Amino acid sequence: MDLLLKANFEKLLEQYTENLDAVRNLQGTLIEDILPSVTDELELDAESVRWAAEWLDDTYSLFQILRRNKFTRSFAMESVRKTLVWRFSHLWPPDAPLRMPLVHCLHPPVVDPFGRPILVVKIVSFNDSSDAFKPLILRGLERLRLHLRRLNRESDSPAPILQYVILIDLANLSTQSLNIDLVTWTMREAIPQFPGLLAAAFMINYSWAHAGLWSIAKRVLPARAQSRVFFPTQDELRAYFSPGMLPADYGGTLASLTELHDPLWNDSGEQRSRSVSVSAPSIVVASVPLAATPLPATSLLNPFFGYPVSSMGGAPALHHGRRRKRDLARTLLILTWRRWRSHIMVCVWISVFVLTARGRRAWFRSSAGGRSLWQALCSTPPL
Image 1 (cartoon, helix red, strand yellow):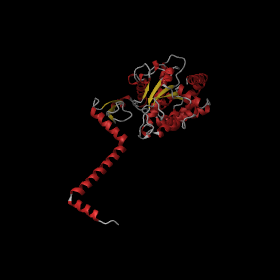
Image 2 (cartoon, helix red, strand yellow):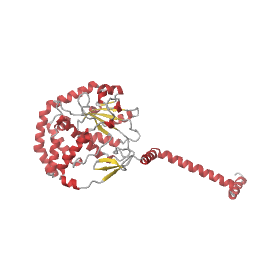
Image 3 (cartoon, rainbow, N blue to C red):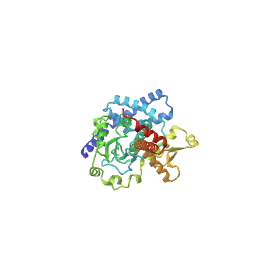
Image 4 (cartoon, rainbow, N blue to C red):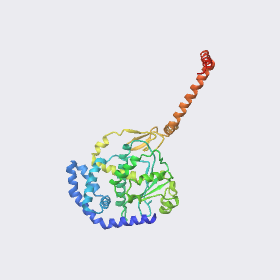
């Protein structure tokens, strides 16, 4: 595992160094030729053009697109044009950041042995519609791109930061209620729009049941992506990252994940302030009152899972100002009903049948009509 990760890192860095001039020349052509063409096609205003130019100025993203097209300039230009049109369909205008409690980025200098930032993602099962989560996944990937660009701008190292490594926690993943359609869409549609973001994925807290999930995932992953997925033991994980680079949740010496600062949200907030200044006059945004948006207690976006939450301007807060026991009890009842609903209904129907049968037997024994009917049945000669 270590040798493979090292070889991939050195190869990527070598390719970046060798093709940096080609990427910068491509940037100039894209801004001078492709951007005006897309502007005319989509009838973009000045604010949209500035937003598109900011993405075209991202050297690291364009390098990954050029690399995906095997450093063929004409293919890369066409790919960039298609991606630019796609971005206006799915990411424009920039929305207010919404914190996702299942995704956490460890703050530098907590990095892997090759200086790459570490993401921790907790995978959970859900039965909700895939369409509700697709925009969140796309916005999250865009946030990762912006954070990576910011890290490179603030870094003094000559070697760029081109990718993340990701720890995928499977402890709360149920194989029975996994949304396969959403997983397939993420692999085939979402991640290809942000090529090269992830260097390696480490599956942790996995069980034998997850082997079946991996066999399904391999069907939608290219061979190159499969070579970047690992199932390390606890000792192998600590040996690669070192205990000082892991949260206490995963055998490290850092604080627990909930206590560690997450730079993604600060970056997204700064990006949001820049986006607002581009996409709309600040006076208009300030004059619109922000309404409190309720979040269900069992929502995956609820950072206080189990308690009702209101989101005021993107900052979730407890609806009643505190954690009430009655709210937690209500949530537990709801989750119990969802999990054991079929078993409970079977028990109810069995109880109704037993009570009905006992009532009929008591009626036969106690009432005059019941005794007469019983005697008539007993005196009837057999056929």
